[in-house]
Image 1 (cartoon, chains in turn orange, yellow):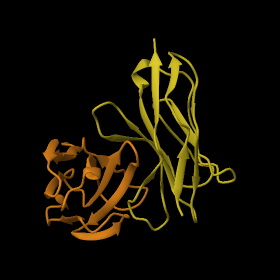
Image 2 (cartoon, chains in turn blue, orange; image 1 turned 45 degrees about the vertical axis):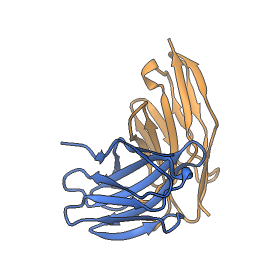
Image 3 (cartoon, chains in turn brown, purple; image 1 turned 120 degrees about the horizontal axis):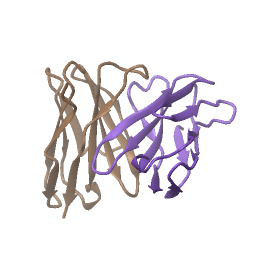
Length: 114
Length: 113
């Protein structure tokens, strides 16, 4: 069974640009969550999508947005990039919602903003 | 609010030593608790979990017990191996939070032969 895949794995962008990251969940999984990992702030929850609906959102500015498609693939978009957006962005997929459903993480997309 | 505090690392041990990584939490209600492990260059992997008070999660020789009275979920292993070298994250999922996880800062473990 293929794991969670994230593309691209590495990305370099310039301040002010926008970026779109993609996450393909494990086949059959309907929930996708996104996290930002930085040395200073650690792992922080961005948002969760389930069956194309955003279920939960973390404390990030509106520049961070996401969506989920009917095949459960998800994208997140960051507009007007800032230097502080440099981070490892992880997505996780799960069959359902709640602690009884294990979340599987992808390897992440490393975003560098210059 | 909800938060997780875990001991700062790095933790450096010799092979076969006993491991404890402390984790305490603050939460409203009864959260579920998790330990995740991140190996170099990889994403997070679930190590173990506990969903109610006094539950013990265990996997690959690691154990942690959900202690509501002390709001703790300490990770232990009786005999570590070099292959256990990684970063360990304690996390909680708040009640009604769907799949949202709140993570601690992570503890880096280095095991030497």
